Amino acid sequence: MLIDDGSDDGGIEEGIFIRPEIKVMRLLAEIEGSKKAAITFGINESKNAWILTSDADCSFGPEWVNEMRKRATSTARMIIGPVLTKPAGNLFLRIIQRYESVCLLAISAGTCGWRVPILCSGANLLFSKISWKMVNGYASHSTVTSGDDVLFMNDLWKYDRSGIEIISTPGSLVFTRGVNSWKSWLEQRERWISKTAHVDHFIKRLISFGVICWLYIPVLAIIISMFFGMMVFWLFLIVEAIMVFGILRGFGEKFRLDHWVIFRFMYPLFMLHLWVFRNKADLQWKGRPVNGNR
Figure 1: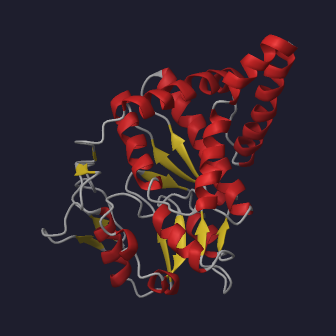
Figure 2: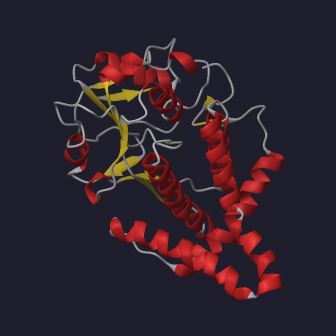
């Protein structure tokens, strides 16, 4: 089932073949433009016990559905699938988007392994319809424009901490299309920040703070290296590079050490700029206001 929510990202172009078993539906004008309304509409229309979500700007392999469906067991409530970005834009923007998505995937896998998941993406998410009804869908955050994925996961985690799992097989991988301008990149991250700000559990906030501290490890490593030598700096960088290399190799993707080094120094600066100069007033994403009540 494909749901057109009226956003300005184009939707289904004319002339594209849609298999007859796939239903294409458009939201009514009075609820158009709300992603949560689109997903809720699709879930209510679905007759299946499990819901698998993705986005119009995503791509995946022929085994994606089967790989995710294998994890739909009686003990599972939600399966977090892997998502990597297909970068766009200039060279530096492509580097930032590619390795950022790898780091987010690592954070998602690590925290889910600790049974305190803090990240997931609606671009690759499987959950049972029973679980959806159990937490009353998006009711607890219906006025928050973003967060259909993370805030729903957070509600489900409060109910059953053992029912959220992650999958990392190559066949389960989904690629999402990157943005091609720094303005769009910053706006997208503003949207991410706006939803994580509504996660109210102390442990999750503490872990999120730890992730932010980890982000600035290269800066800390440079300071330490001033006193103990550059070996400390390279140790930090190499340990992280091995982890990222392992993740990418598991999905058959290439790793470049020079790009990783560029990312680790540029990304903290961009995020610092985002936090200092962020503008909440008129933020929009795909034609929808992020900080409004839709």
